[in-house]
Image (cartoon, rainbow, N blue to C red; front, side):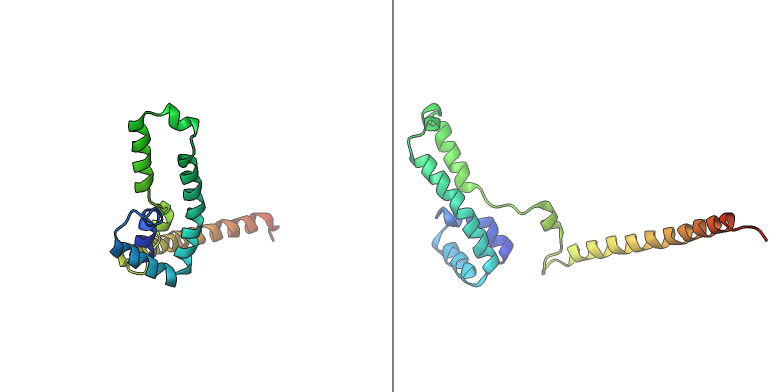
Length: 135
C-alpha cells in the first residue's frame, strides 16, 4: 500500500475496523513510513477523546434517540482522513498525467510572460523618450 491508501484507511485501522490482512499491511507500512506514523499519532488523541466522550454518560447521549446515536457511531467509524484537494492535484510519483498537467500550465505561463515582457519593455522605452529632453 502507498501513503495515500494508508491514510484513507488509517482511521478505520485505529478504530480496529479493518480485517487482519489490511491491519498487517498498515502496521508494516507504519513501521517504515515516518509521515504516516506521525499522521496516526495526530489522529489517535482525537479518537481517544471521542471514545471517552461516547463512553461517559453525557447529556448528548440522553438527548439522542438510540437510532441517531448508533447512526453517528457508524458514521464515525467510516470516517477517513481526506487529503486536501490541492495535495491531490499535485503530481504523485505514479501519476504521469498529473505531471503533464503541471508541465502544461508552466508552459502556458511562460508563453504568457513572453508575450507581456516585450510589451512592458516597449512602454518603458516610450516613457524614457518622453522624459528625456529633446535635442
